[in-house]
Length: 185
Ligand code: S3P
Image: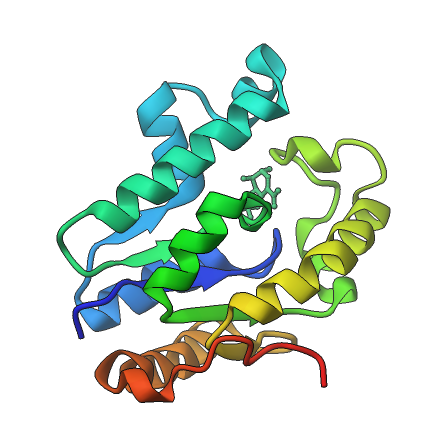
């Protein structure tokens, strides 16, 4: 049970809400990428985008992932949605290997993010951007995931329960982890 449990997925998949519930159930610390970016930089995600641009934000999210993974205590980590495009972050995620993809249909994600308030990438055409980002990221999440939980139509407590059950299996028995569990056939 010594490894971190990583949650990956798109904006609106519920990484923060589910991550918090799962961490409580597993009695582990919880690291949320956006919250740690705020703590480290003193700036919220929209402020960071506005003042320093997306590249600076991506550098921060990379650093907070590295710091969370390096923390000595096994934790639950909500990985930033776009961090998986950084090769070093991908390698770090692979090395940890207990990774669950909170997967949702683009329609579910678009409904959940609504007008995109607080998410700078979604300022213009939130639904269209969600579809485009989801199409690009889906194969990467699928490749990194050792298990997948479909969140469409589920309430947070129910999803968290499924994640906890899966996570216990993955963390207790590393043989159950096969990265690429979410890859399309
Ligand atoms: C982003 C996801 C957001 C936030 C930023 C960029 C992304 O976090 O970090 O707006 O590229 O997927 P949530 O996944 O918590 O919405």
